[in-house]
Every structure is written in C-alpha cells, then in structure tokens.
Length: 480
Ligand SMILES: [Zn+2]
Image 1 (spheres, rainbow, N blue to C red):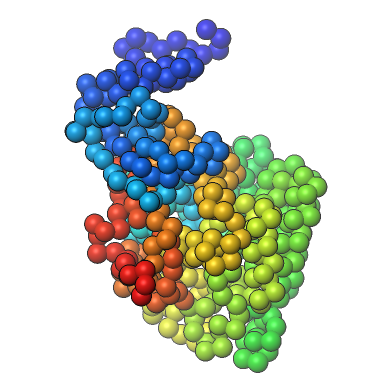
Image 2 (tube, rainbow, N blue to C red):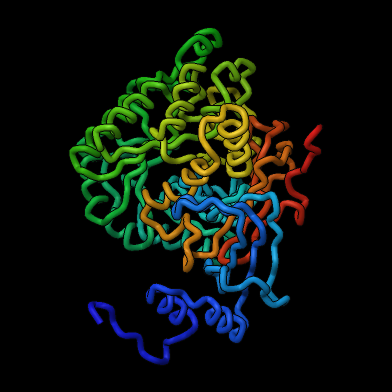
C-alpha cells in the first residue's frame, strides 16, 4: 500500500470512489455518474463550448461536465438525464475559473470602499472565481487573527474563493518581520507589503528566507521611497508641465533589481507586482533568461493609458505606480508577448467618490479593476494589438498564478474543482459604472467600448454570476 493510509470503510463514499477509480488509471465515469445520480448530487453539463484548458494543452469544442462540484470526464455520458442542468456554450469559450492575484477587498477596516461580499461579487461579474486579497487592511493582516477573520468572513459571505495574503512586515512599516510561519499556517498564500515596500534589503532578505522555509512566494510592490519621494505621477513631460511631483521610473527599477538579487541569493520566487516601466521589463527579461526565480505582473491600466491622460487632473488616472509613457507601454506589451510577464491582474483598489474628489496631490492612489480587466485585456491584447493568443491569456490568468501560489486551481482536469468561466470573446459592450457590483466607481474606463467579456462565472459547479440574468453590464449591438 506504500505510504498511503488505508481509508476506513465507513468513509468510502462516492467521492473516494471517484478518486480511487481515477487513480486506477482508467476512470469509470459511467459508474461515477450513476453514483452521482443515486446520491442526487448536483450535476451540470456545459455544451458545445470551445474548451481552452492550458494546463492540459487542450483547445477543442467539447462538452464539459461538473459533478458534485468537481470537473468530470464527460465522454462516457452523451445523453444525461433531463434532471441534469445544461448550459449552452455554443460560440463561447469555456476556461478554468480565472484567478486575480492582486485585489484589495478593504475589509476589515474600510467597508465603505468595498467589503469582502461586494468585492467577491465584483470578481464574479468580471469572470473571476478566485481572488487573492492584499493585507493592507485595518488591522493589517500581519497576524493570524486577522487572516482567520478574513477567511471566516469569506466562507460566510463571498460567492468566489478568497485567498488572503499576509504582510511581510508588522503594520507594513518595513521595520520588523510579521510572523510569517504563523501567517502561512493560518492560510496566507503569499506575503506582501503591497501599497508599501520594505526598504531595508537585509530585512527583505530575511523575509524571503522565511517564505522559502514555509513554502510561499513573496510578492512585492516595487518602490524606492527615497527616489520616489512624494511623487504622484510619472516623472517626465507631463509632471513638469503640470507642476506635479514626479515618480521616476528608476524608483521602481531599483527595487526590481533588488528583488532579482535577493531571488537569486535566496533561490526563492519573488513576484514583482504591477510593473510599469520599460526598464523593469528589461531587468526581469534578462534575469529570467538566467534562470532567476523572478516574475512580474501587468495591470490593464498600464497598457491601456499613458501619462498624457493626467492633463485634466482627473484623479481616476492617479495610481501607484503611475501611468507611464508610450515607450513604457510598448515595452510592457512586448514583455507580455515574449513571455517575460507571466501574470495579468487588476490591482483592484476601490475608493469612495468623496475620497477621490479632491486635489490631485491629495487623492488616494488606485482604481477599481475587477469588472473591466478581462474586457480590457481581451480588447487590447487579443483584438487590437494581437500580442498573444487567447490560450496564453487564459494561461496567464489560471495556470501561471496557480503555479506561483502553489494552489489547487486553474485547470479543468477531471477531479479538479468545478470552477469555470465562460467567455464571449467577441461581445461588444460598454463599461457602465452605475452597474458595477463593486461598492466603488473609481475607474477611468467608464463609457469605454470593449470587445470580449465573461458571460458566466461558475464556482464549485454553481453559477454565481451570469450576464443576462442580472441587470449588470449593458450589452450593446456589435454594430453600434
Ligand atoms: Zn501596489
């Protein structure tokens, strides 16, 4: 029997039978379906969709079956009983539930901006079945009690999977390490001081070493405080013309460089969040070519907009890191195309209207992103720039984040969780902020016409969001 414990007979359910029959090599799905039907468990069949499952190098028009919250092999069943729920996915793309690795849910502490419940609904409406939330809450997620609170709250109220991160330093101050082992034990999938950045390289080295010890990656918001100072917009033509304090590209690149050195020194993954400059792309590309465990992510605003958008002092164009030049945008798109970047994410950062309606200098950084990111990336990367294939885009939202975080998600393999996103890649729609599920509306993309979006989000075999069944994002005619 090897090292595997023998299961007591009374625990031998359909679930274990399913696992046993799969491990036996040939899966007897007919008998699994029979058992599923006998037990009256939920079964859903998604018909005629183009199934793209990069984890299994699969891209074919086929039916997908979810039994009891798990992906099933379907070939055994062509004519399921009418009791089984059917979803018609003709002309649609069926992919593993998308993962957003960079989201601010604002709870505990800032429930007027977003709650775990509203943030999860926004995620579902954007096509996401799993989101990773940042620790800059109040209290900061630098202790097991706060991580536990977030997990319990999510289990109670969230319609998608919520995975918490813990902070690197206590209270995000960059002075003393948080209890990384305890954070990991409580369920943190990574550590990050996002919104802040540990300036002390020795402290950061210790953090990476502890993270390696407990087997979680380090995510870093790359910002050198001395170089950036009080910068609020890209240092360049527009900062000079408008008299706004500049945030130089080198302020990001210095920390990307630091992270490359530490990832190499500690032989452990460091993931650079929301990369914005051409220099960072070059540094990450060169380091990855040498085999360094460094990675980077891109947010849609950093390729959809440049810093000339700030000339009307509209605070929904203020984010950190800031919008950059066309040269930077081109380099980032090139980095996505050549595989330098492995992950796409939103940096969903909700703020209430009264907080953003102040002078540019005083406004908080950040924009909401969950409900627009997939549409923006499909529109820009697939339809307009043709930078990558849709298969790669799906991979960057599924396999890649799952691999970095070492989580069970991002695949449609039989037995995997029944988390599925259905996408209409050619649907023309307009961003209408009044229809957002998020509590906040701070986006520069209101009114934008985009091509492609999620139309249904399924978690654990249950539809948690569907385009036409809600009053949500308005569909417009393709010819409009
Ligand atoms: Zn950040």
